[in-house]
Image 1 (tube, rainbow, N blue to C red):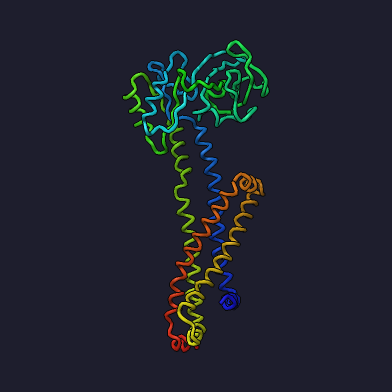
Image 2: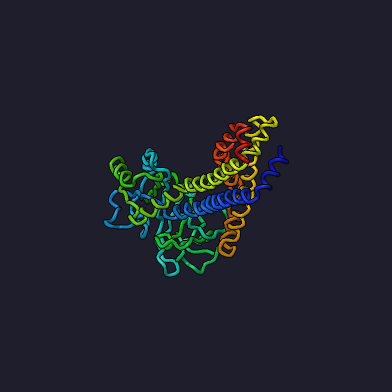
Length: 379
């Protein structure tokens, strides 16, 4: 059967090339979009983390009118106990909660600096901004600090700054955040989770209403006041949530593949019509309907597989050559092999499934031909 299949494909080379090209272009576009989108989604998730918390919980009476916490940092003249953390944990819409304590405000190299203790185990506010560090895990011995962008900029890593009346080792540097982080020093502390804190910073589930969460917190925990993220950042966060969920991208990919497979199905219907004399002779010589059905179906699968292989190669080359090679090579180096192979397998399975469905009708038409009528119609 296979010699017949390849002979038929070579005999109608123009049709074969057109169909394989349609499949290859669809696979190229689909793979390029899904792989590139996966990398973009990771970057967007990182940027979403950089936006920080949705809500800041502070002790009652410390919230200043109109204060934006993102510019001033935690209040320093009152504390919240661990019991508040336990109360906050009862709210299902809150997925992350971390505490920070303002230890001291002092002058470091001419810059007013806030020394803030934080809990590395629950932190999602400081760690995304770390630009350089002496080790993956910062020592939690109370003698190491992470310095904001504007704090002692000439002090190198493993250098020292004087805070809390003693020399503290610079364990890392934070990137420019355009917020209180730039003029703060953060000290990781092992007992931070059980200690009193200046505020708790909260992150909500994607899609959860900040306004509703703020009202619920205010009504159920009387010892606190709540500060919401500024409106501009809330809007940006919602947009990033939508993008990181990949809304619409999967539908587009499927539509591209379906469109290409419809072209393949239409061309195979034309091929079957042109080959009706040949198929009639084949059936007259004793070929069963199942053999004819398999013949058409396998021809389609060979064409589709050729298109898939060419499309995979083209999509990876396209990624590698994007913007002169810089962006593409960076993408391919950052994307894991498992991720790329997974996208190739998913696209291959989708293309084969849709392709077989579109070719079923031409294959069924071929099996229903009466040998005599098919031979006469092809004269």
